[in-house]
Length: 135
Image 1 (cartoon, rainbow, N blue to C red):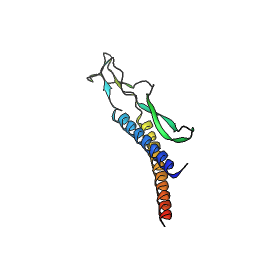
Image 2: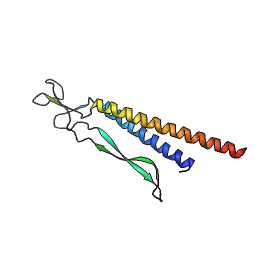
Image 3: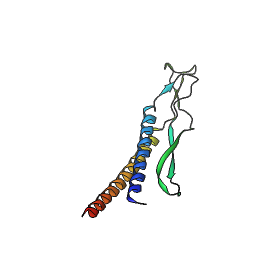
Image 4: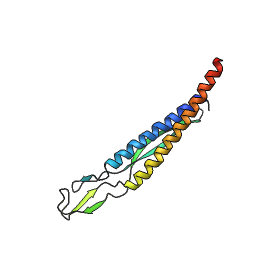
């Protein structure tokens, strides 16, 4: 893998992790979202990552292939009198688990930082190579 493909791979990793962080933020923003009776609550989204390969089948980075909805049941709470309570006083909320999202946020943040470190190291190496070639 040459220096520039290293930069591309690290940049794709940063981009994928930024998108993952955006989805985590959307999930957390909807953690307390309730819905009208009979409707399904917001479902947490999960990224499905995919390796980017070139024509020689060499991995050149990563991308998010798609997002899948969590299949866990939406949370139900007994809150009689709530404007979105059903006839039994049950309110449907999202299925977002805030603790799970916080853990995912730490993983995504660390992965982003690791890719940023690789990017900076590859950039510094490329700059040193250019300086040596100019000397």
